[in-house]
Length: 242
Image (cartoon, rainbow, N blue to C red):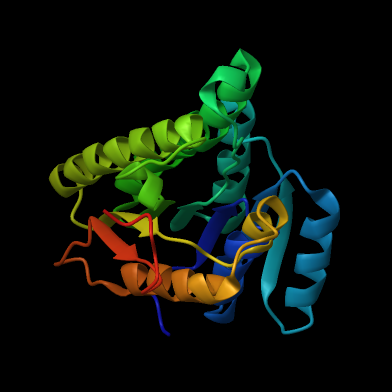
């Protein structure tokens, strides 16, 4: 796929869905910065991509740290000239009944899944407007539309991110025709993160992370004269879809 972008940043990009998206972006010839806290996985993925001739840079990053996020985005722009694509994929979950949740657990989920992506958008959006082009993709979840037991903080974080994404889309449509904003509502993905947390999951009821990665690539391919504010991709057997 040919895209008009030269540089990309993927958060949570070292494993699972983030890694699948990273591989797709790198295959187009983009220089990709892979942000994650799992340094060993970052290094392993970058080494893998370099063997294919791709340009990949590991970026240890805590998305909850606004100052560090701003420094990282500035560094990418200084090196690449601009940051053309931002994929907010970093997310965590704590699956517990609300009566057993701690305030710290709730804070960890909300700050990673909601405040983190907002930090990235704040550091990136203005630069894209000034540059006149770019695309932000926020990975959402069916939990942003419908929740289920033991998913309180996760659902709250994803519903909040969906609302922020829609607001950012409206402002981008007003501010610059060349800047796109898309929310990808992804249903059950057979990623290592999901299978680690729920080893009893029947993988037949999930979809491969590559399916979501292909959906992200489709969102990036929409021409500037059109807009794709949100797209939903779920397995046919998805039980959490409203």
